[in-house]
Length: 368
Image (cartoon, rainbow, N blue to C red; front, side, top):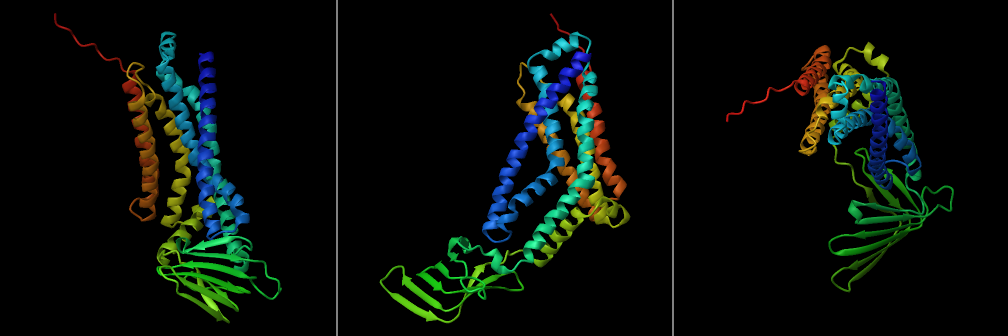
């Protein structure tokens, strides 16, 4: 039994490390692409991309750890079935329920780590991300337009290039802009510029003295205009309604609040956030136990169907937690019912799956 437990713990830990590393790499790849796109659009500064990526990875760690534990457990169990090692363990007197102890030996520390992350570390990370973004918003618009870099807007129809200002009193140095529309190809040059932000979020470049050159795309027509001041749109507004922006800001503020503050606040939104934070470690434990009966496969029939069902079960579980959080936030469910009902149902499903896998079926009588 000691050999069995050590082998199971070692294999789950090994598989968990591989799955965790893979998920982190995939998460960072997607996150960096999105953050670099925001930096290119001027929504965040290029110098804070790595900081936000690191903090955002911390906020994703609880979910990644729960998924990694589930996949590692189900992979270990299914491998023992596929390679007929489970037959050897069963012949040695090991039952399927004896897998619970070694799985818990790995799952309980992981669940404790997830609880620490969700209750303390993740809110701190959200607060740091919000501080990064607020400090960036407080910068002058000049610092958001990086000299020596091309800036695209309007889907590439407008391209700007700025130089470092030679005069300390100028916000932006010389500007080169290329504008494409339906009939004209336009080049605009200016000695200096400044940025103006409207209340709706639109940003404009107000050019100083310069020239504009217009060339018609389907003819030889050409125009040249000198100007003292010229305004061009740099960035369109996001198109998101003010109500949606307010809701997103409120959600981000709720995620960043310390757990003790949420407990003291008896609002439905705070209770929904508490439910989410305490549900992740419970869900990780339930999924680790549920992976034992779900990992049982017939080595003669393959594993695709059973593993697909297991993956869909885990995905459904996490989505239902999100659904419960929304219901608690909207007042459709009270905190205790929304927090316990789903986890109790999944635990009972786990017991039923164990019972089904361990039950010996009576062989059918054959008639001669």
